[in-house]
Length: 382
Image 1 (spheres, rainbow, N blue to C red):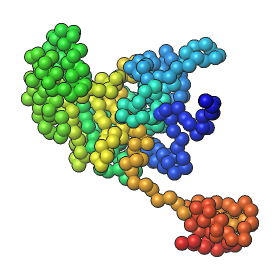
Image 2 (cartoon, helix red, strand yellow):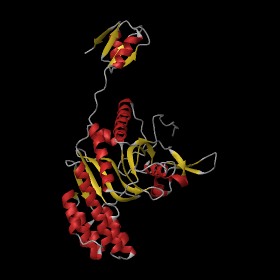
Image 3 (cartoon, rainbow, N blue to C red):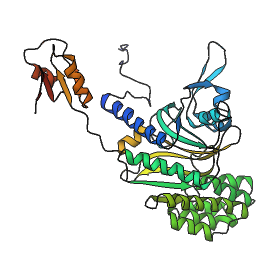
Image 4 (cartoon, rainbow, N blue to C red):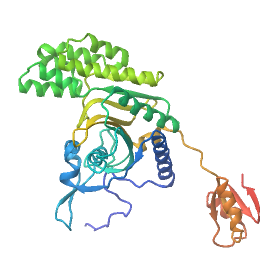
């Protein structure tokens, strides 16, 4: 015997969650902190839409994200639209269209939600992803690379996240080395898969003359100095050497600005860097190893150089110490409104009593208040 049961109204599609008061407030206030740091460095906020026409959103830099986008039909125009899986390509579109005449360097910041078909690149199960980040558009320089990392590190520090590591890589480096080696197509594909899996045995099997070089670079991933030394001494063709030297120069520029920042380098990492063209960076929390944000160098829709970094606020706030919440004060019914206004000005949260209660202290505790106002007196319930 079967019965038809309606699903619980609390049931949500896989990968989507409700953020309840404490978590939602922490994310909102933390995001504003990030944006205020960005603004203090001259990054002006923009807010692209959640939906765009498919051919616009998934053109240019967004083409690499086509397999991650939800699509739907616009009932007005009968054109296909797509939900953004990432905000960065939208910033690239804005820079090359609406802000094309604005003086460079162009500094933009943003915060919002993105929706992806599958799991996020950070290995999380969410399909609705919060993002907050910066994009520096125009210069193609190590100083620009260093600025993005420095602003990101300052933003994390303002949230109390100081135990962090920034991992740098150069996604075009390994593909360039493989291409210059002249390997047959099947061997190239197998070698790329082997690098993706960090499989040294498969690299040795398919790498031919460059197998030892790739294995050496794979083994050197870690502290920046050892990785850069491995790159310096590696037998690299001239085209690939340019990528190596740019990576080294960017690390040096970052160290000039932030000599105490922990920096690691993975010379042959390219996983997840779908539209990036140069130095890329991932920020990790040292305590948990969780990815906090990532970004790097790419080309806007008109091939203008740009670099940036996008935080995942949910991950950042898991790493940040919980902030002390302001005290909640219960305002008994009939209290002069000016009393509550003074308390809010002083930083308290006021909760108004809507009905008269013989025991306002009990009502205050029921509403999670630590103090109560009766008349013009503030009475602590501790």
